[in-house]
Length: 244
Image (cartoon, rainbow, N blue to C red):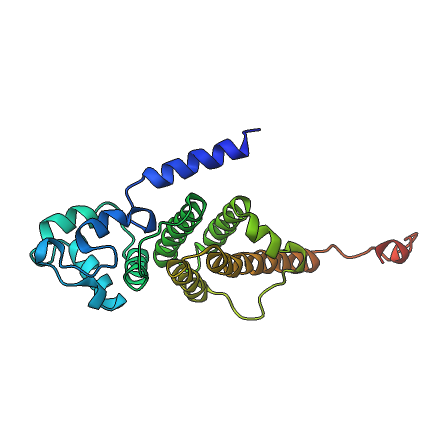
């Protein structure tokens, strides 16, 4: 059995080294834009501190699509490194409103990046999925992602009790699942401390738990419907006491 701590550190190293600009890489932004994003980068860009989160995202999406102003040539290279513009715009907006520059812990970076990557991939998979054919596959991916989050987050383990999870009381079709995952993803994008991101992950595990219980409920109903009839003819034995 592999050493969990060693596996975790290896995964952390891979995530930190992978070129997705997030909170950990904010120094690449502030070197030109200023610690509080109060400067015109190289004297020509807009002052990011004066922009809304939606305007920041629109600019990043533009760079990702090869568009932009005088900083285009530099920024296209930065944003095309595999950036999740939802997460990056939330990080930049928050940083521009927070005086000073204080990078989060490696543990928080690990948790946030793991969540962002997982949920971003899930959203794309759900959008491409066939509502009838791919439901089992999507549910399996959600359960797998939830398990990974649970394994790596000690704070999350304190807040989750699988025994108390119940089937959802509302219909969880593909559109509803996409809405739930998108909501959790937005929550993670706007999390900047451990307790905030744990709340988002609890919501995701609740979704995974509900889907698992829904599957369990369907299996039990199917088994009950397919139960062979009890023989009651000649020489039959009363099995009622054994079935209680």
